[in-house]
Image (cartoon, rainbow over all chains, first blue to last red; front, side, top):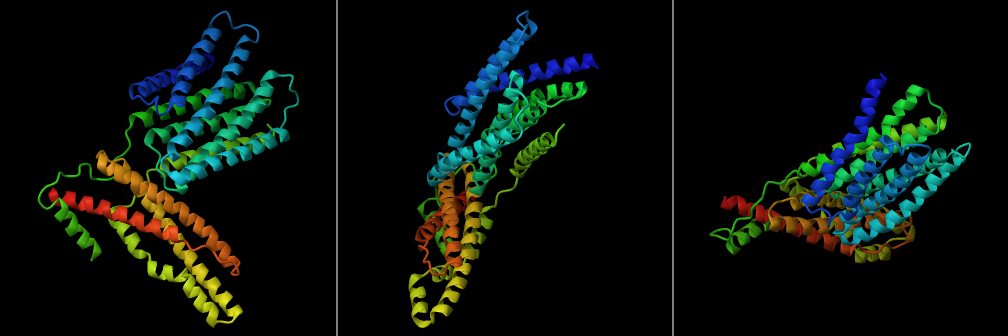
Length: 257
Length: 176
């Protein structure tokens, strides 16, 4: 059991970052860094973070609270970058939709304030017994952040569908991946401060990396699978008999009948 | 585990399910050109214009007692609201259609799709605003809502673009 558990633990820790490396390389090859600089930065940052934490974990540096402190600091930067990515997705989706863009920006601000209040309210209602434990404090904050990120992504999907705005395949994939990741993290942070049986605690240990794995696979899949060509026409014919002005006129006449 | 933790788990499961549902719903098919045309035909614009015509309203006000006028005005506003809701639904379908056209590999069609999408999204926004205004006017008949001229103008622009797309498609079929 322990043998398999360790294999699974290492697999779920290493494999998502290998997939993420593929995502990062694909983003660079497709020159998407100009379109999504924050997401590109996030992917490379996550890879660097993994290398740092993995090195600490397997080397002799892993003593005392070294790992925990590094983990929490890198997590804080990662969380900030994720907010940047969400903002970037918003800008990308609504930038070409004039008046809706302004409405989206204003709504985003108000939704963020509302979600912040909800997160603070939830945190006050379920405050940990003691803040002496650094991890308990981090879980308390992490839970609030997961609520805000889930809410923002849900708002993004609902607001875009309200206006029938189809998200480009990879934009949708990025948002969906973050949505699932935030949902999983909400469970993880909620459970992490409770008294769990050893087997449950071990299972919980796999939850964030499993969620992360699902998210990076989604990112890669949506980047690789091109957007479905829904409509048939691909080429407008060159001007020719019956297709030029005369053709247009006859079509217009047919429409006006 | 406490009740609160169970609540968090339920909330997270609900959110994850919603995200998966949204991903699956994304595959919903987009209307075709013929359906777009039949949607355009289904809307009786003349009747809608009549319902929001201020001259018509002034005429009714001059001929009817105040109580009866308010009652009639309320009914007319509810009817106008039903038209705006239809228009809003059409705008949504146009928007989906336009975003699909935008994915065309032909740059001219993609550009036309972009224009259609911009128009349809603006139309949807105007329709939603008009829905709110008419709802307030139907609830409080003493208030006079602003005439949704920009909504009708935008609708004319959007249908014009859909027709232009139809002509391009027909021209292509004939040439093939």
